[in-house]
Amino acid sequence: MMRTAEEVAEWAEVSHDKDGPLDREISDKRHISEVSTFMVNWETIASRLGLQEADIEGVERDGSDTTRRRGLMLERWRMLEGPQATYRVLGKAFLSEGKADQAKKVFELAKSATAQASKSSGPTAS
Image (tube, rainbow, N blue to C red; front, side):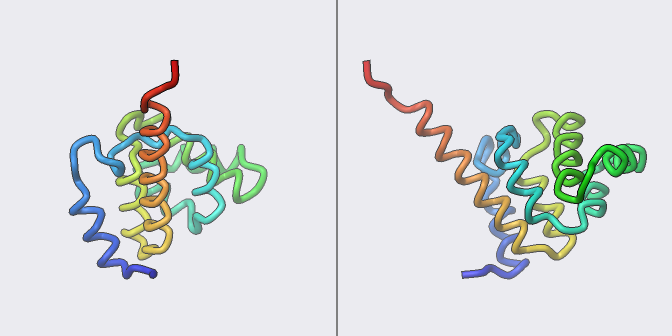
């Protein structure tokens, strides 16, 4: 079931547990790659994420195609923001542009990252 922009935004606000899934740093390169396949208007999202015009121009210059530019932009954002480059921040950037479907995908990635982290930190066989 597709959520409306308001429903996705409300979920993002309600799901504000400290160290919850949305507040995890986006560190999985597979997630960066996945987001770069569905992101549209990457320049606008870059601005929403706080990248400066010089950063955007550098991405345009270094990226050979649109998907590559999207990935480079996300990597640049992660490098600049460090632990503040979270799923919540990225999702809200999409919501601010009216892209509830893309925000929902980002939030789903956050959930999968948390599930994956739980699996890898769970009990191990000895």
